[in-house]
Length: 172
Image (tube, rainbow, N blue to C red; front, side, top):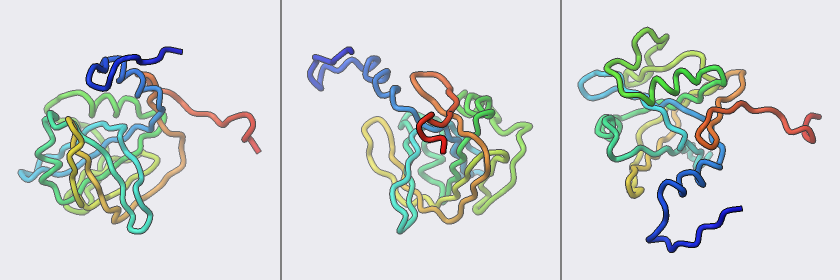
């Protein structure tokens, strides 16, 4: 087991990132509609539930992301929880390109949100607040509607996509 011996001011950022990557997360694509009508989307694994009453979720976005202004200015966003077979969508929305939605099956939701088909869960949220999170912005969304579908989730752990399976002691 490797232990950090440096003070908080002297943390090794690369090693800290590797340590944080030991926490397995789901993979999401967050979408919105920009003020000029463009469809905007990005991959995020920083999604979490906050509250059931009221129904609140959060996710974070780098302040340096090209889409930061689009998301801060949007009235709504949609969070899509990717299925195990959708790693290609995670890569597509994590990579800069002119039209991330080209050839993708989508429908349109409230406020013109692009909604991606085939995911295992989808949350349409009102963009409630943003908070300072250092080099990131933390978005709080109020869930206005959601859908859940059958399927296994796409998981990200230690820099790789992973698949899940039930623990052998919990099969019953």
